[in-house]
Length: 500
Ligand code: BES
Ligand code: MN
Ligand code: ZN
Image (cartoon, rainbow, N blue to C red; front, side, top):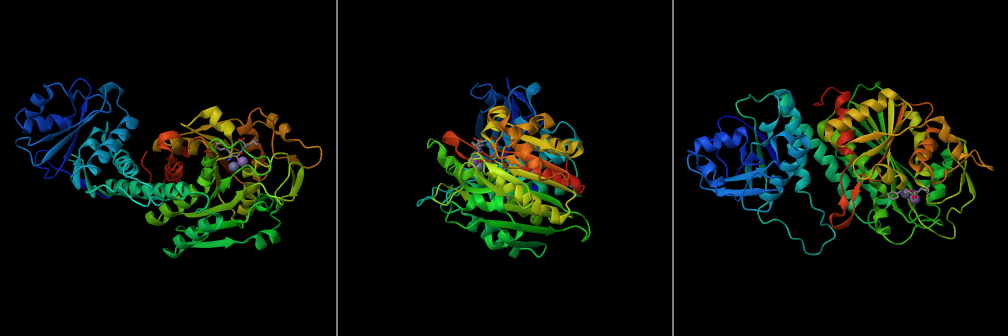
């Protein structure tokens, strides 16, 4: 979809559909008030019929309002004015875009950005309008033989900014929104694709084709033989049970000065996790196609960096593998040697994410990153702790942790920090190797973080456990594209292009 800034008077906006917000109890937003005045009170008198009160989740199409340049007005209920927040705004933007996408107009103008509390908030609110509208019209139908596409999809959305001037900052906000949305859509596409189609090789091909589109993006795929030579015994032990060869995807985006240290993003790319010999129960196992969402978010973020041409160096690394039971698979009790030289007793073959990540993290050191963030659907325990609303955050650097928390808050893609005190490390003790790959039932998300921390001592490092946030279950089953918004906010912040 195309987005553009629209300014001037409300009544003068020529469009097939003008979107205006109304708070609960028919409390008109400024834009709705202006529309009412231009129409000689027609809006108020229609509202008096009582069908539409402005509750959240309500919407109403009106035709032929006199004195206005719009063919239709779409009223969007915002709920009580006092309770209206950026989160409610995102939801309102999404609702409007979805409704218009499924109805006749192919272009519209939304006045919802004028709900921003202050001028300083406007860039953020514009950015979020783009992200929310794109997310609301996202469909994954690649695997359906007959696709029900909207007959007249929304193609152009004007974002109304009242009498304010267009500016570089506001245009940048739209671009940021587009970039984030591109990254999220790619992450969702890769994640929703099932394990038989989205294999490690497929992920590698997707990364390669991204690299061909930009001369700033260099993509290299390490094959199992090269991993062997590097001594990646932990990563390779996971893919032993699979007929799909593992891939280590390495993407280098060079938008910054050649000598500037990069930000490294490392994403778990487990294209299907059956658990291995420590096999998972079969109920809901299909959802383990989503065990590559961390890797997908890294590939999505790299695509967004390319689209936004960020003046920054970013390295994206995705260890990709399957985890399946097989005669040659890892067995409980097996001891493997990681690239770092540390040995690991694989007490549970289902704790495979940390095994592929530890070697990928060791490999990351060669890029001398200023910071490294790994992103992984790592533990069911994190879902128990935080549910679907926040990703788990772990870090060995408090400044980095705070920057990530701030990026999550600003983008609405929140992370919540959990402790990594040394007290937990003892749970990983092994009688036979340097460490075990599991730390028992207690604090499972934390001991997973502790495991990774042993391989990142030389770097400023943070770990995001996205097991609860990366996809939705049930009737709305599907990837969320998280934490691409957080990651992009973090990267935009680092090059001074972010909105608060
Ligand atoms: N990919 C899973 C984690 C997971 C489970 C994500 C459920 C989302 C929903 C990971 O590989 C795994 O199996 N972790 C184990 C670790 C345990 C054996 C210590 C888990 O969480 O059960
Ligand atoms: Mn597992
Ligand atoms: Zn897994």
